[in-house]
Image (cartoon, rainbow, N blue to C red; front, side, top):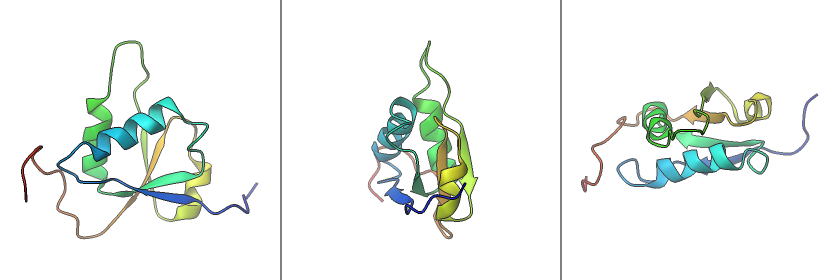
Length: 98
């Protein structure tokens, strides 16, 4: 069933900062609130963020690469849909000004 509600884009934030980890925690901890939302950014950076938030007793955060905003509605709960932007440099070293 197709939703008539528009998907909501969330930017990953500074790839060398805490933005990607905060976004990943939000998708892990509040999947019902973020259903229909997706992250715009770099897939590799967001995968690294997903690995950073792994904790004992908490599920891993799967990440789904989507090709369009509408696909965000098909992603299962506790999965972070990512729309890859072309030309992004990939994961940057943490805490360095670029």
